[in-house]
Length: 164
Ligand code: PNS
Image 1: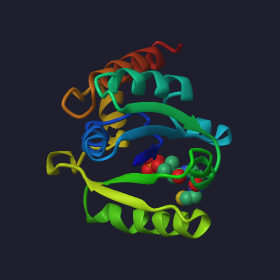
Image 2: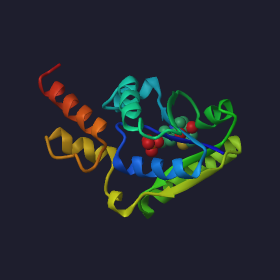
Image 3: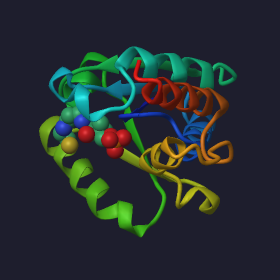
Image 4: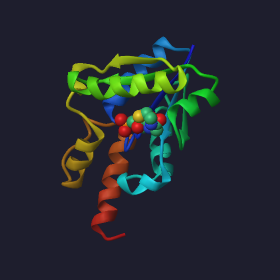
């Protein structure tokens, strides 16, 4: 059975990587899909192309994982893909309410099932937002995100600081 792991991935964290690695052991194939909306591009630090490049590098060692992107409703993407299962990660109970709402909406909109995978507790405080916040002050993020994300974050904030 195939699965789709959707998200913003701005950028991918070790928590995402943990969930993805676990999903890749359960499912035959997992597609990591950057869900993007051109109108909301300004909300993200990285462009779609940058996020895809980071994902390609970070997932290169996972043979049954591929990377994709989609602009639109997740259920439409799932339909195009010939259905499958949505995988979402849970770090803590606080994630659950939001995730439950999305899972029910996706089931109502497109009869798609969602499977939740718990990230290891060591990642429960790690998020893309926190990694960006820390990186923006040149803090150490090497233990929170994969190397590809860490390098991209350092590069991005150095460029922003230099006014490029
Ligand atoms: O990484 P995120 O930001 O928590 O991911 C949320 C995401 C992208 C999976 C969710 O916002 C999404 O599926 N967006 C696509 C639009 C959609 O289908 N919306 C209806 C369900 S919320």
